[in-house]
Length: 213
Image (tube, rainbow, N blue to C red; front, side, top):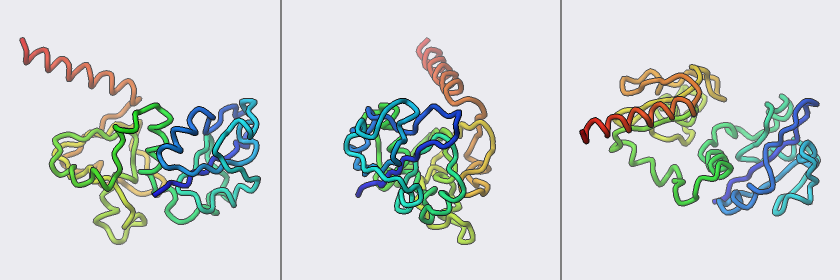
């Protein structure tokens, strides 16, 4: 099964970043992604379309996102582009996570697919959620009135203990409250993810040193 990835050209005049660079393309292709990009998307960093191998280009932004499972952009897309996206495209986070991890250089053999690991959460002692929202919202599994009901999610809430690292209690793409955040087994840890993780690692190492003393 492949993930259809669309990459938009930035439209704001001050934006000099792009959502995809050529060096990441082979990593995404290896993960099974089919890449479609808006023509001229690399102009901001002086890369023409020919610099992106194994990518299909199109000029029409709406056509680009119409069949996309994942849409990559630096700035939020315009409303007319969002309206052209297929239903629940924002909810297809497992595929998007593959893309982000590949961009970060995480080895492919350390990336698990949702269907391969979901059953393991119920026997997991600790789950660390970093930044995710809708994709770990148990309402997708338990609340038939929820707009995300039926969407595939990670069953992180079934773990014995969950720590969620976020900058705040902001809502996800679906615009709804995440029931996980209020679960008895969940602790919210607010702050910059990198800074929080450094402190967590130091604390765990401290516990190990104390136990060994």
